[in-house]
Figure 1 (cartoon, rainbow, N blue to C red):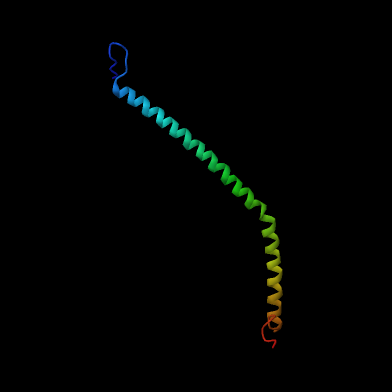
Figure 2: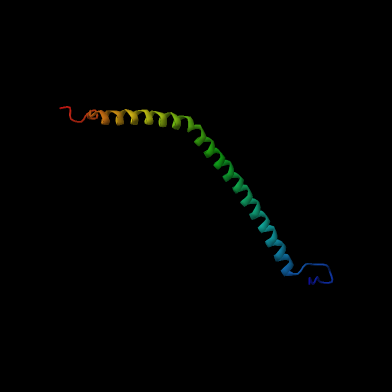
Length: 86
């Protein structure tokens, strides 16, 4: 289906097609590069989040202990601190 001229030159269509294919190739390389950058950034975000797991665990335990004390005081009939003590 290609129709090369007798002198071996490419037609205008073939030149434009080759040019567009090369542009598409470059654009795909840029997309791949940007996806790799995004992947590295996402991995960094996940790593930072994992660093806070121990802190979150400690605060959860603290909250659990404090919540049990408040429930215990409520069952005993004592008003929470700061309420009713005027």
